[in-house]
Image: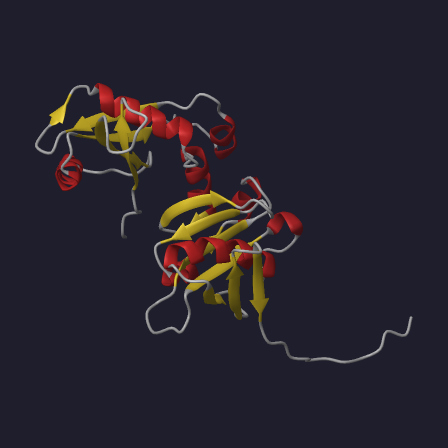
Length: 253
């Protein structure tokens, strides 16, 4: 099985101006995921800056998802590597790690919770949507979107309304990105086609792909196609799609 992507940040320490101070790479490893010393050293060599800091969340074996999500004082194990060797301690890389933990949107509690809710997801990023209060989970590819196996009981425990899963569409598919939307809190295990989710997705993918007109595929069992235009000046997302009548009748009571 392919290993999950590792989230990283490059932080300039002991300065408040970009490209000053001392740079360090900060990498987050999931608690259950084992990475060899050779891999850690290879990553540090690839960054090729003075220090790379690896953080692993310390979780007791009896810690539940609920308590993991509720804890207010998470603890981490740190290791520091130069491009050629491991060192016992590094001050500026530790400051960089602390800065990342306190100032970024990246949340290891949230990642652990979502990873348990979306079996098979190779998570690249997690964001919180502003209007609909969903978790937007970006995975490595559109194919991975279709492979995800939702664990509905775990999704209910996640913060927000529901979980949007999205990834860039496969080459030649005719689409820009794929998505799925799970909302068991509202009685919708998997939404066949969700317009509100695509308003948030439009903002994300427009910035990532550098375009304002997008074509999206919702990879639910029924499938759905969205044509999207982002109007930044007026702060609007325009959704277009087709519809077909499949039944007609009368309610007599």
